[in-house]
Amino acid sequence: MNYQNITRRGEAEARRQGENSIVHEPSFLSVTGSLCPSDWSASVLACNERAARIQKSKRGRLRSSLKRAVRGAATPALLMALVCCLLLSACLVAFGQPGVPQPNSPLYGGGLNPGQAATGLPPALKKVGIDQRLNEPLPLDAVFKDERGDEVRLGQFFNGKPVVLALVYYTCPMLCNQVLNGMLGSFRQMSLNAGEQFEVVTVSFDAKETPQLAAAKKQTYIAGYNRPSGAAGWHFLTGDDANIKRLTEAVGFRYTWDEQTRQFAHASGIMVATPEGKLARYFYGIDYPPRDLRLALVEASANKIGTPVDALMLYCYHYDPSTGKYGVVIMNVIRLSGVITIILIAGLLLLLRRVSRKRVMSGPGVIATGP
Image (cartoon, rainbow, N blue to C red; front, side):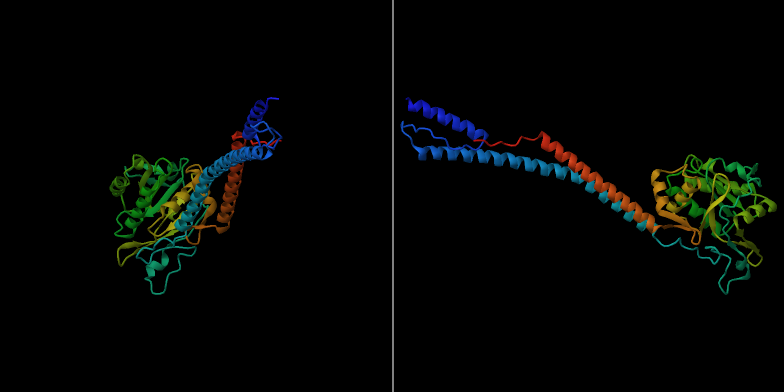
């Protein structure tokens, strides 16, 4: 028998099995032509070690691919969770600030009982204030004159949009200008535009004032507002005693004439009305936070203006009539945070499962062993 041919066939078989599986030691002859189990065992052992290294290398590559997939899938989800947490924290900080600052005047009328004056106030100031008339209708048929001197009905400005209403008088030396300045500052910080998403109606409660005064005041504030739709959306009106009285009584605005100072004693504040002409919100003082005013307009419009973010904010923040501002509803914030957390966890688990399954199916096969 040709032992060398037999040996070569044995070595070729050993190499072929070493590439695919762990080689089990057969009984072949050595190159010398005689049986040599020890030499053959060394050759088989070397083949087995090579096959083991191949298996270990392939498994290592598979584990590395899975780790990279997990890291790549987890990063977007973690970033999304971080962004949501930062947004919620920012909302809590922004809307948890103290109330609006009061003007340097004892005429500030806040709360549900604004007519209660402190001891020592002048008698005139004890008669002023703002009494809330939430959900009460405005006299839309009341007749006034606009800045051009044309007669207009109050209802003409309620054309499907919420309305910001302010009662001032144009020759006021201090407080009324501060009210108008506060309105202007808030309007300029809002993305909503007067004349597009809402209307602004400023009415003088001094029957002696003329449309010329109203026109001059409008020119000043429209220039400060500096938006294309401002002139068509911000109206300055004057009227007679009868129509002024109807409007001021409807909104709960109490004022009086002070003979000693020759000025009107009055409170400071603005109102937001629905497109149907019903009073929806009151804001007191001379500073009106743009966020609160925006939420009031969105809420008064029945969510017809604004964005989905505004609707979400209204779920977390409700108007408090006793303070005239929006406050955090803790339970709603907790519910919303819980829902967001559950959605993020479920989405992350689903993404990781899908990526892992795809990697396993597309990766190298498991190395089989055989005799």
